[in-house]
Length: 350
Image 1: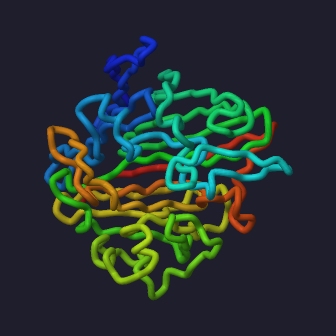
Image 2: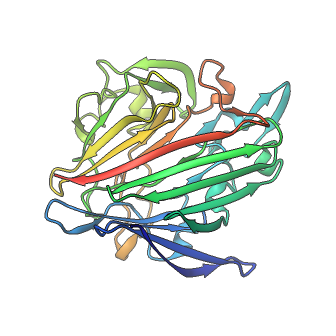
């Protein structure tokens, strides 16, 4: 049975309390989530020696999450990843968004879902976060109601279930931005982790990480993780796509037969800790980011500096810049439709 603990960890400028919720199952795995930004501040799982290890990057203080520009552990919306030139057209109407990375739009803008205080409730052994995004917030049309349910199972699965409805046509791409390090040692990088991604294509990008529109076969490239491979084995190869991202920062396209299929997109294993993570999703893509731009002076948990490539993200989502890419799966949500998405992070040790 999943248990819940909660405590107030701070306040917004208007006095609104910020609460940290901790889910814990009978085997001792626990996940801590803040209602500020939906931030997963902690995931503790057993290694092969039955010791509990912290496996996500984080901070000791709430304010550090608020100041950090790397979206560590946060819910992302309305639109995860990039939108070219911060603009898109929908039903003949052009919308202009914040340009918060170079001349483009990233992760929902200047005040995305990662910077919002969500309403929280606990029922059916799950934590539910709700947020109502008003019409034209960050430039997006429609009043959007979003619900994200976090569930921790007895099988050591963290399940994130997303639901959303709108009163006007809009675009939507929700994801989560935890940085994992399955070694439990945050003084080390993640290059020794062994990763498998079940995808035969990835999204080709330009020097600003904006999709060119082309889907590239992974075969005979450093992006072929169909067979388990150390993350660091080819990350510094002389490849233009790797140079653009300073390493891996790309979307892999899920190889699945049905759009709503819960598909095992990736698995990652750390040979020393023995901790394994399997990622399943109903989304059409996963963005693998290897923390290439970390290491700028942020001090993480227990006073340990966050280092370059100190964590990796597997952000299940739609493809970047989808509103401007007609050949990509649509991210349009209309009234009387319900957006639904599920992602599972399953942990074990071996």
